[in-house]
Image (cartoon, rainbow over all chains, first blue to last red; front, side):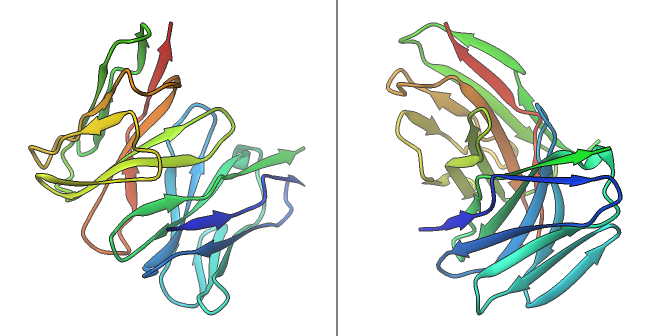
Length: 109
Length: 113
């Protein structure tokens, strides 16, 4: 089966940089993706890594190390609207998409 | 507009009754997924389907059933066998490629009364 671990909570101030880590165990790894979910809303896709290295999308970047089964989401120039839950997810060879338990990010003024 | 639609947004059920949650997508995606989310928790996979007339159990399939008779539709039935059905249910769809993002519906909040 698949399992993912990420911190339950992270707090940072506006304008800061925050990193949310994710470690995973899966068979037939196809990629690690990240989603954002605001309270009461639906998750929305942020980024995806299939190969080792850093992917940058605006203020958000995501990193993957397949040998370490580890990835992270980096959020720069934090804004109040970034307060949300962030989930890492892995897709395996059977195309099953499994999510971590989520990290609640609180951005303080 | 292309997207994925879940209905209803809120649903109340009496104990012992089955209830079906609707999920429709017009994104031409092969893969569809059902997740359950409890307050302050992550998304747990109930069922997923990669192709019409085929579906696989996820981590918490007990007490749930699905069908995939059409590519566009993946309804979820919460049966009376599900002992704690009150939760937020999310449906998602994705394309064939491993890199394809998953698109989510707005969710159905089910409450057992």
